[in-house]
Image: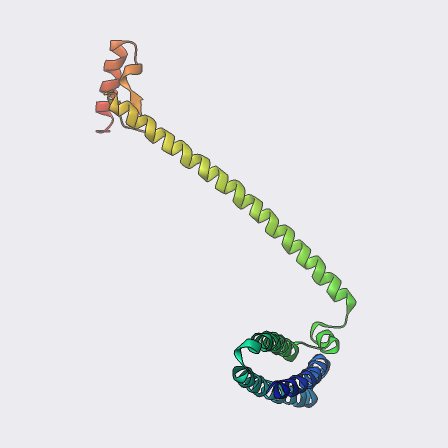
Length: 194
């Protein structure tokens, strides 16, 4: 049984080497050649998947005392298979340098102007971020003042001092003269009618 597994391992090694070679060539090709190579690699990957299934079945038939070694080898092959599939996906969407230059323009100056534009945009974003942080700090400070003012008003009310509500809060206890207190009360009574 282990001889079958070892034969599958040899087939696996051969197939994965061919696939790796082809995956490396895919981004450099274009048109029909690329399509053909992609289809070919896809077909070979399917063969490798079937080979992995056969290997898995062989491992299940191996006696338990020897199975651990083969299971670890199979696990590493599965990891290699996953890596191949990821590389294949990347290679299918990758463009060759020629295609990239054709799409972006071969002009070296255009890449410099793009870099300049990107650095200007980055500087603009950093400026906006700083402004946003300053505004956030100001809002937080204003909120803190409002909370403290509210707390002071509550303690003043809790102490039994009457307050007048208008544009600002004035405590009657701050007036030292009874006459000033009467004038203030009169003005407060008159102002709602006006």
